[in-house]
Length: 105
Image (cartoon, rainbow, N blue to C red; front, side):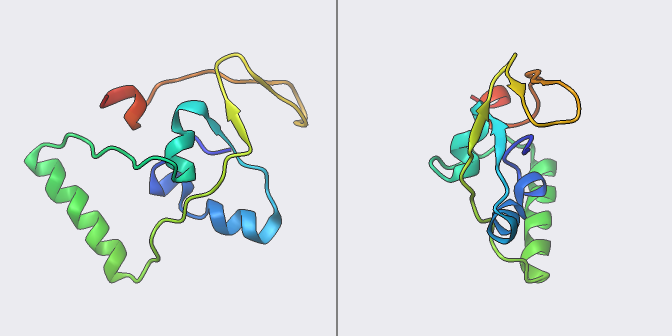
């Protein structure tokens, strides 16, 4: 279950799916970005935030980390959905965060 499309939350998802055949669940608003169907909008950043953002991604490149691989989403989740197959009932709560559909558009 992916909470949103940022690299620190979905960075290894494609490899995990390839290795295990895992089913991917994610919030419907983030599906286009997780799957690669739409480019993730660039966030509006202050100069200080921009410098931090660039530094983080430069560090990724210096460490030789591969670029983000998108992954297909098997189940798009929406407020009130239920997720079956868990040891107890799971109900989806939409809790807006810091991804594009909720803050930047």
